[in-house]
Length: 274
Image (tube, rainbow, N blue to C red; front, side, top):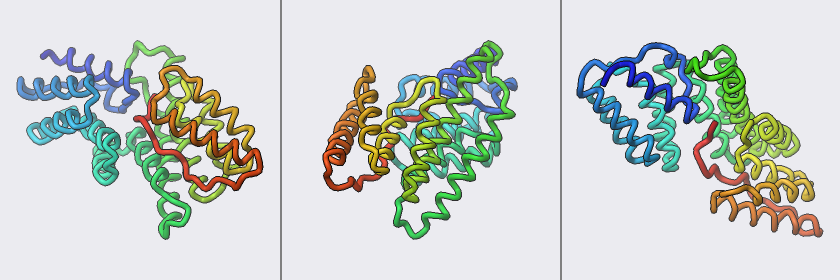
């Protein structure tokens, strides 16, 4: 494989998935035929969207070619894949390894922020320690995004700004989850609402969390209005639809004078974009 072809693959995947690395603006090269084949195997696994396939291909590349220019990419995609498998511990390991290799890798920061916030509950003994780490990751990611360069010169300024808004929305969602864990429902509404507003393509799971925050804050009408939009989303993930329907039933019960619901934020259903 020619180096140029490998670089085009990296940039193509980066633009398609939102994987934006400071390293991506540099020339990435393969040093042998074997490494080129390992990189292509990773590409194939990414296209198949198989978590196990991505992990296997990434580990193969990292174990056989420790000095590969594609190390950061392999580490990050492994972290994402473990997240899809709901293996939080290994996701954290690979996300932290990504940050060790690239301290400004804002997607790894946001991945950690969202996962930690999602798994923190109101009565956890170490709740504040975990939520402060969430806030730190989001702040660091926001700063890194501000100085990040386009991964592909073919991206228009408008497209690049849209991608950056998507990352900002991801950070706001993590802060919203942190607010829910602190039982700060109005603050959670503020974060989720802004995330939905600024994201060029709002994620239904973020809207679902906004609805949960509205219900918890004693605002069932607002919750139902958001849930109706979620349920009207074309090709909605079945699990999101199921949770949205259950949440709408809770909000309707609250509106009619029923007991206030005690549910936590709904789980993350799909890998975050943009």
